[in-house]
Image 1 (tube, helix red, strand yellow):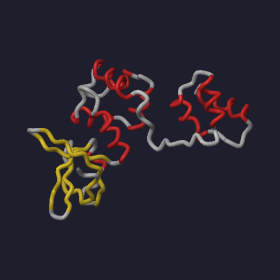
Image 2: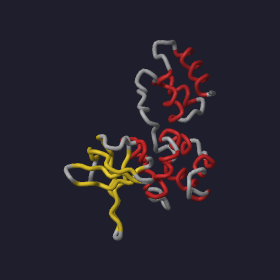
Image 3: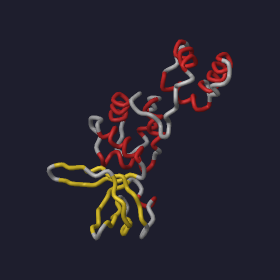
Length: 184
């Protein structure tokens, strides 16, 4: 299994690039080939897809994009050729947000994603994904989190607003500010 390949982008086509590394050209299917610069070095995170009649490499600009791809790949009825157009036209954060908010219309805007597939994605992945770059610390906000959960807010929604909160404020002010953030 490959984690990533670093090399020179020698060819760009409509759905793949060729990344040359040590005299070997790797054909890698990517969401947007033109996000890579031709004849320049690139680091591409790789997923190797092996079936009895196919051995393909799929590439990603970031670890987060690759992680989302792997999560989506585990959904029944979803394969790499359905996921790549999703990543090409939608952002990782946007797709995760649509799943968490059960936004079927957003998911259905992608090619080959119908009502049934969108519902299956939401069913399998809702609450299991975290937004890109979002690893807020709950430390220092234990009381605030407890109060907001007591008011019926979901932990994922609470975690999204924590980076905007000031732990030095009294708890009453934190709750007031948190409620403003949650109602936006």
